[in-house]
Length: 571
Image 1: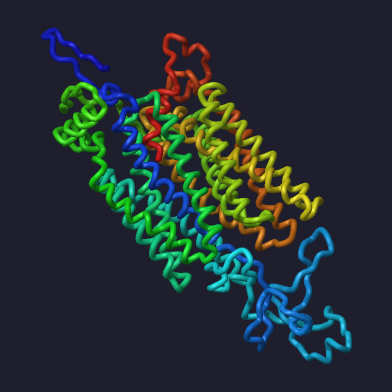
Image 2 (image 1 turned 135 degrees about the vertical axis):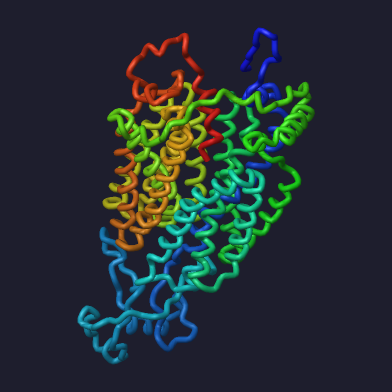
């Protein structure tokens, strides 16, 4: 508690954090609000990675011209004869001698006599086909199949995912301004309306232009929902519980992905799946009547009466005495803000800031890239997606268990380096083992995903504790914004599998992600540890942070409390 007793024995003044602790760190009210905030996060995860199923490209080949009922499955000897005179055989990969019917080419001369006379297929000219048939054993229908995004249009999948990430980038600008002006609760409802509209509307689109436009808006809306959820869900949680509560928000994301995997397995038509995961989100509009506005935001706008009423309600529900009434004079100790650009004027802080930016970019790129790549590494896409989500869950649990024991630096660097080495190692079974060792590729890929998820959750806290208080919010905001660059690039790296093809195409995205993870993890070794260290307050503190080991036991601050108190500002 901040106590300011004058000679006239004025009443003690309470800062906002003192009131939060007085209300009970994680009482009944906070538990209810936190649970309500976890549910929308599940929907955010579902809609973010929905394209793994809705835009998956099934196995396919050129359709036989003139055959109305052509299908991917072989129907008999006559069907096989038509295929042989119409579609050339091509190499299925670059390791063994397996062949497959071409997905993009037809013979120009499809005269039956030519085939029967035994002329070599290699001497016959080919042309591109304009119609395809698809394998329906895994998916009955996908958007990629409907729009025929194959052959020279196969990169459209990556373009749709890229626009989603661009939407998140632009949303980080606009939604923050909207929420600062109209309030966190209003920002949540507005973003959720957009989220619901794009999700439900996406099930009925007929054109690619409309589809990607909705994905773009969805990206911005998702950022707005997550920002509001983070603030409203964690603002009234006590310091000691915030780090764990923040991790549980990310774990609820995993629960959403597991739900998506199970539902996608049962609903193989992408439109049915899109509707099934989108319609229930309409219920989130009811939050308007169940959640309160952010007291901190109300105080920032001078609306103390409304803020005090909410705080009294929290105290009553938690069985705590009513907190003291906050007044304009009872504000937190003000800290003189400085320009974040001053971090770039000193060699030490410049290098550290650039390393942090690189790690944000790489963490974001690898997390989303590996998530989007689960259908390209062989095996069953539903099982791969589930295993990837379980690996992500384990990564979050490992991060929670090790942060306050091993430290931020050791956990982050270890996660990045181990994950990177596993992804690089996946190259060997892919290139030299063939299809018989697909399980090892999936295992190594999931170790990489586990490391990326763990590092992704740690970098939020680690960077917040390295930046000085006078510019912390601005610098964390810049880091989050820079990270979107990684998100924008990740779909194209994941799509290398489709573009390059063969076993090299399977290995290439994993090796690229692994190399970047290893590079960023090794760079992060130059960052100082923040566990049990007083956080830097000024630019001078930031420059000297980590240089002197004597920041002394007398000034020691529990990083788990200080770092957690900034977690709410990061989203």
